[in-house]
Image (cartoon, rainbow, N blue to C red; front, side, top):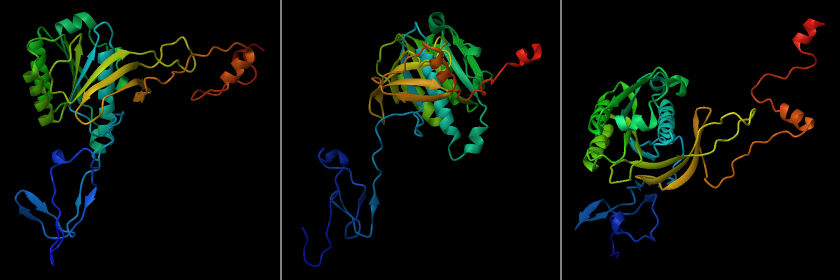
Length: 307
């Protein structure tokens, strides 16, 4: 209530005390100097408080605020968990290369640590160097451990090493050693050292964890290639983000085409491979040469040589 000769006073409550119908304020400006009265705060018109704008709650590739500890739950009968972890890691490294210190990040040739326990190796195998992206083939350090306890130790020690660009791990099932305390240790170490961890949980239940982002991944049909519909397409996954600290849950079809991670809605119709049925269709399709060289016009060089 305003008295005569007094400046208007506004009392600010904590956001937890506000009803859900109250919208978020972006700026606040009123009269009277800042004071404390019984826990309330007076704000003057000369003091403008700018509140952070609410972020878009939907996750998408290329985010700048990548979490440092993520978990991916996948089946051990397919490599979708490890492949998605590698795709998310490459997306985070690419975004880091576009940061303010882009010159240093662009020349970042640090190693990537990949840790697997013995059961994960038995079910899913080891990473194949020739299956990795070319820029990562000579940067991978692989560690195989006999027990989950040793795997957790290797992961934590890897996060402490500044010579690693990131750490990827694979652990089978829900071992007793990997409880909330061990998960919390990994989160705190990653946050302290600034090294990101993507931990693949094979055939595991989503128990209590301190991971900032948790995924479920399954393999998905690839988009047909442009030139040969029978050739294997780019990797794709049915990904579900079921828990995240700063993003809303969601489902996507993630694909890794041309080394970049892309996301599409799960109900979006994927293009089917088209087979030309006539010579006219073949010619019209051949004109879409894309990034290839121009088609040969007239006789071939071999025919000219024979003539």
